[in-house]
Image (cartoon, rainbow, N blue to C red):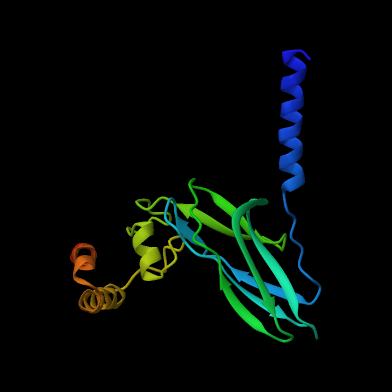
Length: 190
């Protein structure tokens, strides 16, 4: 066999094995899945996707859930067995999106939900608050009417101070940095 034919055969074997091994997980008819994704995430920062899985049937059901991003399965697979009538909440391992854009996220080819990955330092709605601060405080970085309030920032600072005293000594420096960051945000914004 010449080198070109050998190379072509190896390429076809690799492609065939990839296509043949790719699993397609379908939901059993008695399994219902509801899932949520955040409207916005920060590029490069991990976030979780949760799903509520229910066995509406009369028999034990086994289900494998596969997370998909823009129609492409990712390596986040969750398998479980549910008793009849059982409802269970599952969280996939953290996902990280690397580009600033909107993504369609789905589970087992269910209708996708959209999340938008934003740069942390950006200000999507032009309200003077960086995206990362709005997401941390629970306001919508795409809505300039919904801005963080003094009480939101103060509550976060108080929760971080409480966390500081609950954690091990070696974890305290990073929490102290967060406290100082939010104190600076407070004084610069209010």
